[in-house]
Amino acid sequence: MPFRSHIVERRLSVNDHAFIAMLLLTGAMLVAGLTLPAFTNDRLGQDAQTFSILGAALNLRQYGSHALMAVIILFSAVFPTAKLLAMSGLWLFEFRDRIENRGLRWLEMLGKWSMLDVFVVATVTGASHLKILNRTDVEFGIYVFGLAILMSLLASIWLRQRLNVSVRTTLWRTSRARRALGITISLVSLVLFVPGIFLPLLSIEKWLFWNKDYSLVTALPKMVNEGEFLLPVVLLVFVIVLPLARFVALTLVRLRSAPSQGLVKLTYGLEKWTMWEVYALALVVVAIKLGDLVEIGLLPGFWFIMAVAPLSM
Image 1 (cartoon, rainbow, N blue to C red):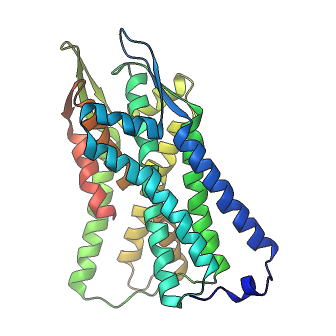
Image 2: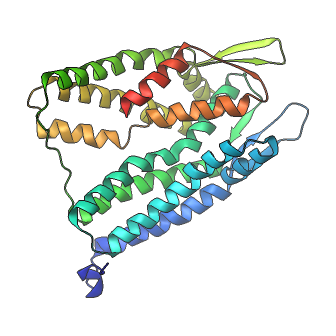
């Protein structure tokens, strides 16, 4: 694999230096986000415990949750690190256009899954603000980590522009049956999306006599009222607003026999920022993690979210 010509000839532009700086800064913030305190859990009758993201994942070994520990480490540490290394490789070396386009496509698709642990912490924090669980307070590390993941998403978009790899938006002609199936999937996704937001997700029984429902709509304003702003904004934007916009745009694309290139590019652009599937996986992780502490009941909203997740992918 030969180095790119502008690197060999040392003709690095201001944008090249800025891109390198962005990768280095993202890497440093990723390390800090994984190791700095991310949340504090105040358990009844015990001293408060503060965990980093990596520390919380490794702590799962004490409960025998090795598979869950592997999932958290994979999405929170391995994925974002591999993405930074892959972007560095694509910037340094010459590849065929097809490989570059496919590589960038996969980086943009998989990058958002690194937000899993942010949504796990947000879900647990929302439940604690509803007085369903013991108090959980968010620490600085989770914000550093989340910002690092968002910066890596921006870096992948910037890299595509630096390499002049265009987004392919050609719509292939399909049969009426396939087009009808696509329209049906989009409309079903929209119909299931709304109850997934408003209906209760989890029923959590605590100390055998306290039962309360958890829903996304009830958690967000409660978190804001108690002084937590950034996490509810993240949930609102990436789990509600952007997925809804993408579902609508995708439905319009499929309804039109010849959609405009602008609408197709908008739908493609929304895809990499829509994190409904990541939130669905976060709910599963939370249900498993809390299953050893309290009795978890899966309510209709949870199943609506699980139903939409594969359709949105």
